[in-house]
Image 1: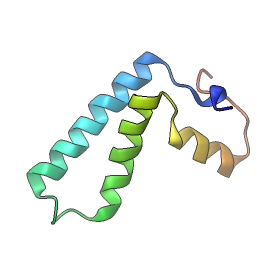
Image 2: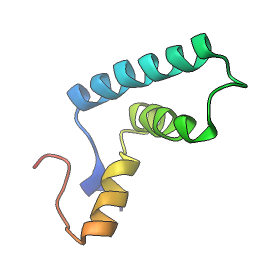
Image 3: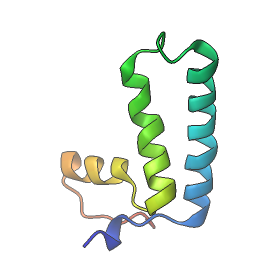
Length: 72
């Protein structure tokens, strides 16, 4: 069902590094100080790393109406 949204291992590594930087910044700033909106990309990145399915790819395909997969 979500096979067209699967991401490669290199994209997983990119998302892991990006999420680590965002979560590190949230931790250094303070979890109660940071706006809740900053948690969304950090959580989406970790979800993509764990499952291999990129929520950003799904949302952009829904908005733009394109049926392209993650390998393009």
